[in-house]
Image 1 (cartoon, helix red, strand yellow):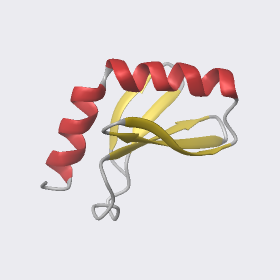
Image 2 (cartoon, helix red, strand yellow; image 1 turned 60 degrees about the vertical axis):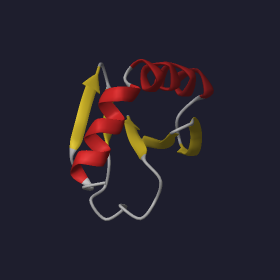
Image 3 (cartoon, helix red, strand yellow; image 1 turned 90 degrees about the horizontal axis):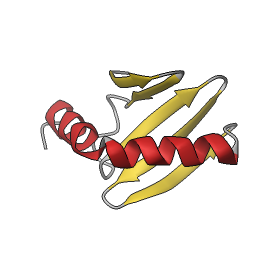
Image 4 (tube, rainbow, N blue to C red; image 1 turned 45 degrees about the vertical axis):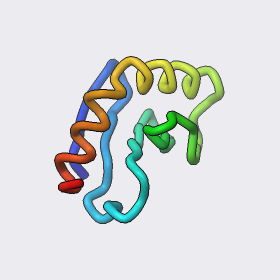
Length: 78
């Protein structure tokens, strides 16, 4: 599970066995985890993260979209 980015307590990562899905990023925060599709940026799933923190994570995904997409595509050789 490669970590792409850490901002504060948010850890942005993906799983190595998910190359057949559209580009996305998982974000771990405390005991929760969410997943955002990257193009377009849409919340795909959320388990245990508050709406307030989801909005902050979404903002960070938008700000770092290029890096996240590049890292995902490079790792999955797309």
